[in-house]
Image (cartoon, rainbow, N blue to C red):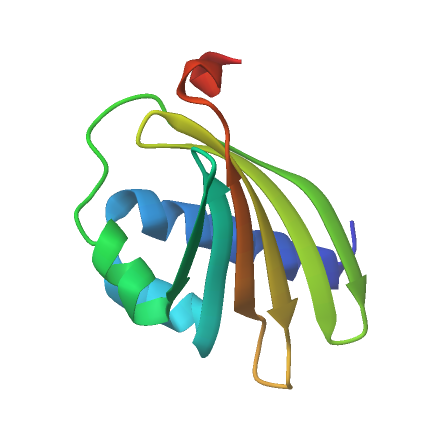
Length: 123
């Protein structure tokens, strides 16, 4: 693993830790201010901006099992895609994070996610 891939993985793991701990300021440092979020949960589309995402996760997740894996890192120059599989609030998610490094460090510019069915949390 090269230095660039390590830096991208570090951002993805920091994102998960900030999300499960409800650390709004850390999330704001990791995401571009204009980042957008789009996903599917229970057959419904979910769309929000950074402020709404941070407000949703600011309360730490209840104690319970935690799980995160960075399954894929693909980058070309200053842009990257990361696939993260995680357990958040008792539910398994697949997150696709789009990152960019405009010269000041990697930032998440978008998150596309799929919330798996609740019974798949242990799968």
